[in-house]
Image: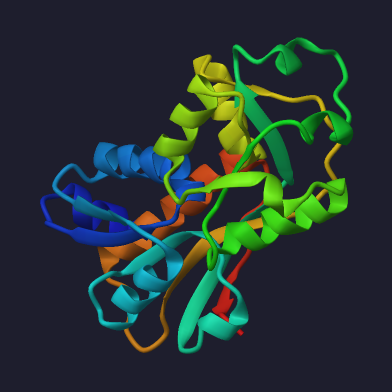
Length: 234
């Protein structure tokens, strides 16, 4: 409450946020709108890139926070983290024109004939997609395109017969927009941890702390899970 009053009554704040794809379309924009509503003079600077680049910027003090799929402990030395939620798994998505999308039931074997668009090597979500492919017994060789851009993936899905894998909340967002369809195929549950990391050697400012709290609120609403306490990024 004190932080909010401080910003609302004229204090100027600035938050520099690194954004990973899983949080870029829903969680971060909604948190920005919420911050703007209660602290209109506070500015937010968003940088979207791969996790290695964003963590480097964080350590070089070019960013205050990095938000998205939490990176593995091996790459988070010297960082604090807050787990907002464990996203309820990964789903298979396609364009609305695909005949497969009209079927009431889809088996993993039905996916083999389609090209796959998957995240690029070295990303956290790529590891999860590979685990999903293994569980569905789908060949990685069927992935003809690798992309770290959700915008590019959406276009490929809407204009070709390719399939891709999205976190459930992201798939639901694009289904509601009428852009994509969620295929009714049973996918083994592989949790996607969504949260934020920041430097343990640099105290977060008032604006960044408030924004972190709002990210947690939005993530809890969107992902349907309770925000976890902050702690070292093991």
